[in-house]
Length: 459
Ligand code: NAD
Image (cartoon, rainbow, N blue to C red; front, side):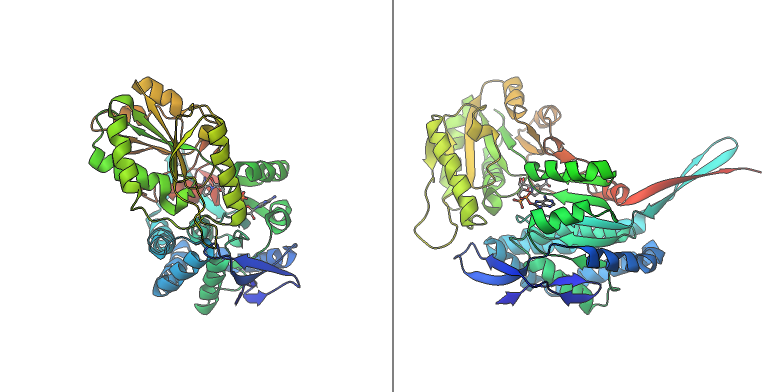
């Protein structure tokens, strides 16, 4: 049994109360999680560490990020094992998507920090130059679907820019954040630079957002929670980055290469049991190739390995959408059932026959459930893709018209003939109810620093 502890000021500490961490693989209790309600100690530790950490040069902080990346990489199998245990995802996915990309987040921001150029703006009689100051203590809150990957995506740039951190992993999946804390103390990261607190969102998460000494909040999670975070933080004029929910479309045009499109759309549908905010849970297929596409898609689905969803509670939500789909007139082409075994398993489910404006086809389910729809014209496909409240991501599959269609999708990110192909320098984030702000590359640098202009009059 793992006992998760908070990391505060370089010490592992626990409040009196704990709750269970349950593996969705078989519903066994795998860890005890501290139920923290107050973040004052963590904030004090982070404040005390600020002068030392912000006093380092950016090159020195890059060296620390590399040290974290190297130490994490040495234990990459353990990271993947813990992530797989905690989330239920297959080990291969945990290794490829979670563990490797977590290492890359630290390594990328170390390299990126070294490549930052000074920003100057010459006038006829004066020179402006920009310095980037740390914001101070920042709060980082992440969800359960890609636990360490999404938390390290925030921790790395926050540390790079000289901030000290209060990080809160999801209460459902705290194991790898705890492991990262151990690694950081093992390599001697100065005390208080990275603090990790555990507990329920409305308690410890809310305490982070409310704390007056925490100057910025980077939040990834659901849209409903994002509204609460925004309502709390906005009157305090905190810097706020919100990466929220999605309901993304994979658009398969008439001239798509089905040898690429079918496995690509399938991966976008069901990787991580559909529990990635970027997953394409609405598949829009041109009517002329619909039958051929669907035959191949359903055939290849039979060999696609998925894990359980995150919890039995979440499975109930997913199942309720499958019931709703039936009421809305949908036909279940595959899946729709709960396999006969312990854990939060659910078959990969494909539903046709629904209106693209139905609730099933427009609300975020965040599970292995996909609706398929056919269209006649590009314009119709674009309108179908844009009809939800969300605007996070999408993909277009075509030999010739991908870019033209991609540019008309109201989303922060659109892939053409690929999906989840990530360059960490590019902006990452959503429009509409999928969020506010962008992370990645220069956007993360901008978020985690205060840009100050100094204007020097020439003699
Ligand atoms: P969630 O909103 O329930 O929780 C996210 C985090 O917020 C957790 O750590 C939780 O403890 C915390 N939290 C809850 N209430 C809080 C409060 N009042 N104040 C502060 N923190 C609080 O989301 P989830 O169920 O963990 O994750 C699934 C959601 O995340 C989906 O909607 C998915 O689309 C979204 N997501 C978005 C992205 C993105 O980059 N846009 C990435 C991954 C997941």
